Length: 68
Image (spheres, one colour):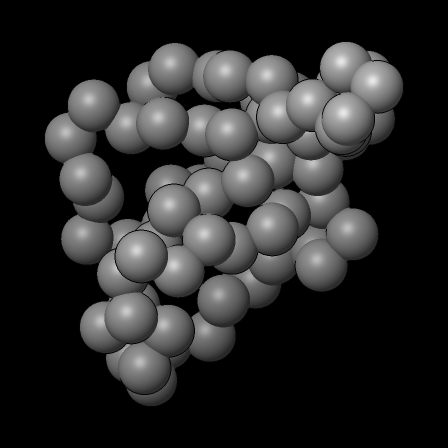
C-alpha cells in the first residue's frame, strides 16, 4: 500500500489517498488514524463492493470512498 497526500488548491494536505498495489476484494481492516492521521483516508472501491450485502464498518469522518 502507498499513501499519497490529497491537497487543496492552497497545497495544504486535506487527506491521504491509499493506493493498494493489488486491488483488494474487500476493504482492508485497519485503524484509519494509523494510516492517515488526523486527515481522512481516500480509498478507491469497486461498485460491486458497495452493492454487496456486507456492512461497511467505516467512520464517515475518517474515510472517503472513491468509486471507480
